[in-house]
Image 1 (spheres, rainbow, N blue to C red):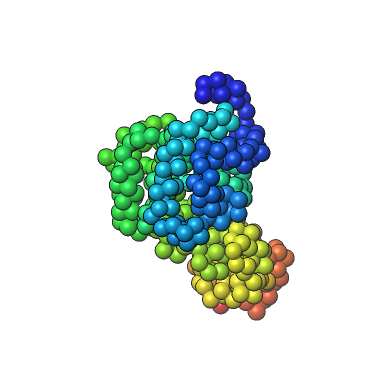
Image 2 (cartoon, rainbow, N blue to C red):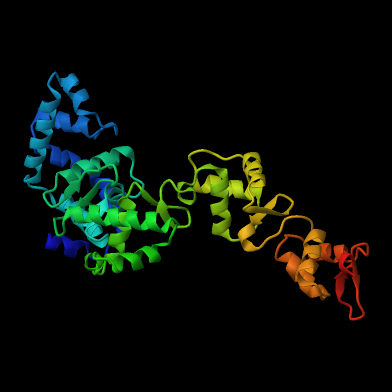
Length: 367
């Protein structure tokens, strides 16, 4: 292993991924040679090593004329044998890469994340092949998923698995108490002050916390990297309104509803949004402000709805004094996506506005 580490020193993660992709099928065949024909057939079907579609124990049992329990026993006995089966340097390199990734993540790594770090954009067959190969290693262990946590790989029991469960429960209590979305830095500061502080007092401490968050099926993050409970609206990201709200917060400027739709479809590709549907949702929600023809911003930004004239009148009502032209223009442009000339044309309407002796504007309504 040490020799292999020296040989691979200096290689980039990308080159390792490319090298593994070209060898992965050969590694599967190599490992399968360590069991008899019957066990080999069961493992190939069980893990979808050729088709990309894994089969259940029951389905395999029906196909082979044996019980479900017998299939499970053959699978279990096969991996016990394969863990002790002599492997090639290429297999050892795969496991070495996996261990390196796991250690960088803080000692454990969610199963999908590990596969994607080993092979870039793996196919369904490659994903299944990787699961099979990782299961064949004596160095790696796998914790199955639960209702609250996804499954993950770890190298050895350097810590109690129950610690991860307990920390996750504490994080759930934190969010339930806060009742708001928070960024990662807030979570990090919170956890360091708890009794779990020492668990994260390692160079990979932040990565360890991020991995626990990523393991959660209940705590999730949104497009902006904000964390909260999965059923909270800013986190669930359901519907065009919430997605549009996140898009405007992400890009921090007013956008046409067609641009907003384009960004929604770029970031959420499962179901395509339609421009008119998005437009209709924006109209109904007071969080969005129409600041130009089809252009929306957020009320949180201090933007104003209504016409340019109405914005100017409201300004005078609030200030209760005459104002210089530049002050009025700056105020309107900060709240409405229009040209400066549009503001000046409105100010020139003497039915509503006029100038005093100092050349400042006032509203006739107040004079």
